[in-house]
Image 1 (tube, rainbow, N blue to C red):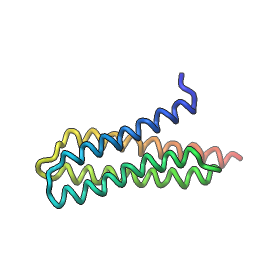
Image 2 (image 1 turned 30 degrees about the horizontal axis):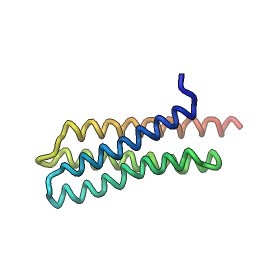
Image 3 (image 1 turned 90 degrees about the horizontal axis):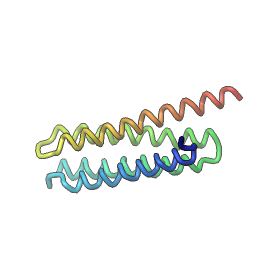
Image 4 (image 1 turned 180 degrees about the horizontal axis):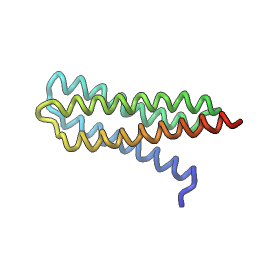
Amino acid sequence: MATGDERTQQLQNRMKRFVLDTVHFCEGLPNTYACKTFSNQLIRSSSSVSANYRAACRAKSDPDFINKMKIVEEEADESIHWFELLMELHGVDREKAAMLAREAAEFLAITVASIKTVRTRMNRK
């Protein structure tokens, strides 16, 4: 069974892989204005998921953790949005986009659950 630190490291690695997979996906998109614009936003939001989760792991307090995780929540949801828009365009690998969107949705669910857990703990104090 993995410890909390091991699970944290595993999730950090998974998020980093998500960013790299998203970049590779975006590099294969058609060279259109819409694809370029959406992929730029997608790379920003997906990398923000990873970067802000790392920051949350170094939070100085529970409220600091929650604030950083709320950013992760917003960026994961935004990433899903960009994947959904890209799936509507011609020439986009919809299967790959859907797989990456599902990964972002899992990060979103993990983040929301983590925030709820910390809030519950704070309310017990």
